[in-house]
Image 1 (cartoon, rainbow, N blue to C red):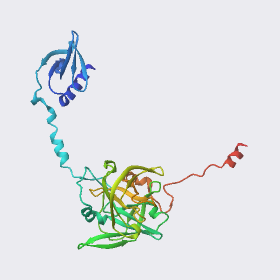
Image 2 (tube, helix red, strand yellow):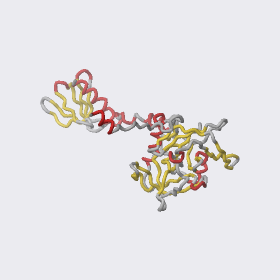
Image 3 (cartoon, rainbow, N blue to C red):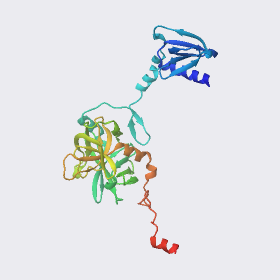
Image 4 (tube, one colour):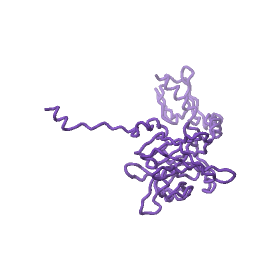
Length: 328
């Protein structure tokens, strides 16, 4: 047991402790550290992360040095892995959606709108309209549950950039793939024939944002498609109806619902879904972490046309009168 302790100490010391004294042990083992105290039957050695007490009968030789040896630093060797990490692409495929590995450079709203504007869409139903955003090239898109609640006829308007101009394209074969009415989220899919590979957004990290950072939204307030509003993140943890929301001064109005809230790297950090009616600059968005959870577990929220209430099924409550009759 003592040998195992010594060997593990050697491995850790080789990476963390500055070379000072070397204690050679039996069976060709050794410990590198700073001798703190020497007694007749044992010595105490500081190995950086703890102090080891070593019995004298296990020690063969103690070699002391006046200063650390610069050439004995194995700490400098982990450089190759760091370089490999730097070379990694900033975008990592998560499978169903795309999320960055690291923070991207900030850009102007003007540049970002030109870059990601095609991925923001308008969602229309017989009773109203909202916004949405495409999350992969296959035509899957996110919106709010309340935008499509109770509807089966859904169309999506996509604005494709052709020859420097935006061309509006309407897709009418739109399928509801998954819903979570408690988080106000819905996943749709464009299933029209001969659809192109769609432009899509990147999923960011709302937790990495600080209050006061600039954000912007793109949506269709009151049907005014591709409206861009800019503001700041007012708070990240506004409790409303049992959930925590991002609060922003970016203007949010009816029709923005389901649209993306972006950081200044062009990554989605929330889904806009409501505002304070009698107030200005009081908009709210569902944090992107909730969206990622919904997408990662979309099978659990799968929607079925045969069962519009899916995946929420409630058993009939027990009847008190029936229970009393049974007891009698």
